[in-house]
Length: 226
Ligand SMILES: NC(=O)c1ccc[n+]([C@@H]2O[C@H](COP(=O)([O-])OP(=O)(O)OC[C@H]3O[C@@H](n4cnc5c(N)ncnc54)[C@H](OP(=O)(O)O)[C@@H]3O)[C@@H](O)[C@H]2O)c1
Image (cartoon, rainbow, N blue to C red; front, side, top):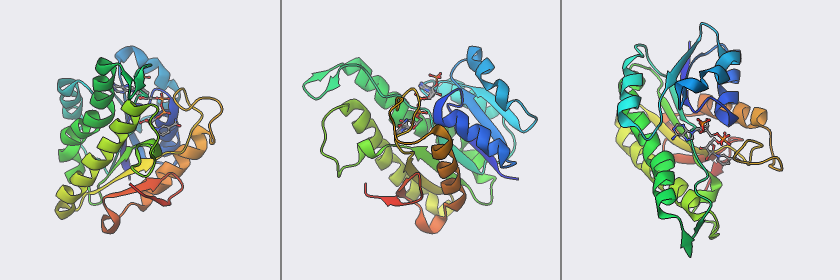
């Protein structure tokens, strides 16, 4: 049976992915940032759901959580993310907020991969998918929300490098744009529902193959330009 680990399952796309992965009959390991958020997981509580608690900025907490898991992880989805600080234009930057955005959106996913790499290596078909954004694509020259854009462009690069590094070990690595989604981050005017996005991203997870490792995908399975 497939085991998927998803970070940030307390709300948004991560919560919906966890719910739908359970519906698909998978084992789901899902993280929230604080133990007090555990009540957000009530609708996920089955014997196939394992909750973990860590903030992706806290390397020690991620390692402690990983040590509680024994079996293989087939799919790791880095879903946790933030839009970044209020002031994040190129000419008016909240630098602490920028650094925090990089810590969560860029460094955090790599930290989580490192902690769970032993579990991924126990799978016969290990896949790592990090939710990035088309806002980080180098083919868009927009300058608003530049901390967020830069953090997603950077995580694309980190994951592309990781794909090269892990290919010989048979581990597939990719990034994906989940769509413009009606969550706290995407807002109520966004294009698609969390249900549509989660279904598309889970389908993508199922289709990821080593032969196409190191690519950037749209939630509907189309390949995106970096
Ligand atoms: N929504 C969109 O339109 C859209 C578009 C493109 C890309 N994305 C990406 O898709 C992913 C999910 O987005 P979403 O719309 O579901 O966002 P969301 O509703 O704002 O949820 C964000 C999730 O990330 C978690 N998180 C934030 N900071 C964290 C930290 N330091 N450590 C661990 N977890 C943390 C949150 O946990 P708490 O509840 O504890 O804060 C929450 O579970 C993000 O990476 C986002 O950049 C979203």
